[in-house]
Image (tube, rainbow, N blue to C red; front, side):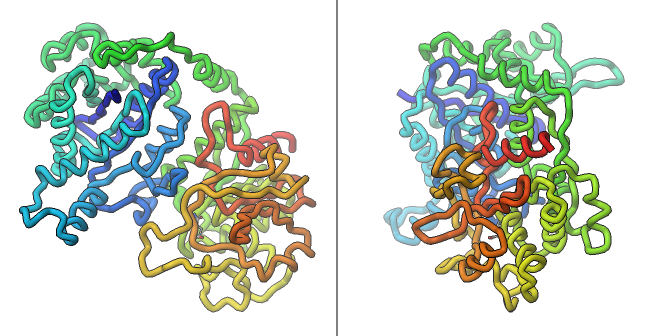
Length: 529
Ligand code: GLN
C-alpha cells in the first residue's frame, strides 16, 4: 500500500518546502523505499508554461512533456527519478477538468462545488500518484497555510488522512522560525500561529521542520513541541545552509527518515547516503573557480535559469571546480560594446528564451565565441541564434533571422515547426523527451559516448532544412537529428575547440554526480583552455 506525506508551509513562502520534501525523498530512497514526488500549485494558470519567467522562474519540463514548476527540477535532481505530468498540478488544472466535465454534463445536473468536486479532483491526482507503484508519495502544497487559494488542497489532504489513517498519511509542516537579533532569541509565536491555522482546517501536523537562520537549542524545540502538540523528537531544525545539497544530511542527522518510517510503518533498509556524501565532498574540495558567461535576458532573476545554473555547478564539481557565473544582460549588448563586455569570457553559454528582446545581443555573443574560438554552449534559442549568426557572418546571407523575430526575413534560418498551432499559446510547443540520433565521430557522439541522446524539448521553431547544405559546405556539422521528422537537434563547428548547441534543453537531465554530457564537455573545454 502506498503511503502519503504532505508538506505544507507556514508563516511565509519561499522557505524551501521543495528542498525539504526532496531531501526527505533522498533519505527514503537511500533506505530502499520507492519514492514519487508531486507539487500542488494554488494559482489558476493551468500550467506555468504561459507565465513570464519574471513571475515564475524557470519552466521545468518533464519527460512526458509537462511544463512544470521549477521545484520539479529540485525533486528530480535530488531523488534521481524521472517524474511526470502528474507531478505538477495547479488549481487551474483542477478547475479546468471539473469545469470541462460540467460542460459535458458529467455531473448529472448537480450543483458543482469546491467541496466535493474540486477536492475530489485533487484527491484523484493524489491517488493517481500512488498508482506509480511508489511506496511513498511526497506531495508539496505550494504557498502558505492560510492562503485562500490553497484551502481546497488542505481540505483534500485532510480527507485523505481521514480515509487512510495516521499510519498511512503524514503531515510535515515547514514554518519560519524567526530570530530576533535585538533580543537575541528565536520567537516561536509565528510557528504556533501557523499550526493553529492548520488546526482550524482540521490538520494537526505530525512533524515540524522549523526553518531558521541558525540552529536552535532544546528549550526552543521544547516550546514548539508543547505549544504545537508535537513530540519533541518530531521537531526538526533546518537552518540556512551554504548549499541546498547539504539539507538531506541535516535531516538525516535528526532522523527525519526514521520518524517517517515509524509512523508510516515502513520497513526500511540501512540508509546508504555515500553517493550524497561524495557529492558534498566534491563541493567541499572544489577550490579553484572556472568562470562562465551566461548571456540571457532574464538575468536579474536567476531562478529563470535554475536548471542551467545547477547543471553548471554539477559539471564544475565533477571536474573539481567551482563555477562562477558572470551574468550578461543580452539586451545590453550591441555592436559597439560587445567586444569590450565579453573580452574576458573563457566560456559563453546562451540559454533558451522567447521573444525578441535581447536577440541581437545573443547573436553577438555567439559571434564573439565563434570568432575568438571561445567554448560555446547554446541551448534552444542559444542554438537558433548561433545558426542565424553563422548565416549572417559566414554565409553572408541577407538579414537572416528566425521568423519568431522577423516574419518577413528573406532568409528564415529558423522557422515555425510545420503543423504547430499558434492560436493557443498554452501547451502547444514541441515538448518533452525525443530521441536524437548522433552523428558518428561528432563531438556530440563523443560527449554522450552513445549513438543516441534522450533529452527534453520546449520550443516552437526549428532549423530550416532548406539551408542545411549551405551550412555544411561552410563547416557547420549537424550532429544530432530527430530522424522521424528530420529536425535538427544539435549543431557544432568542428574547426573550433568547443562550439556546440542543441535545440533541446540538456539542463533538465543533470543530477548530482551525473552532469549532462554537454555541460560536462563545456566545463572541461573551458578548463583545458
Ligand atoms: N523561442 C524559441 C522557440 O520557440 C526557443 C525556445 C527556447 O529557447 N526554449 O523555438
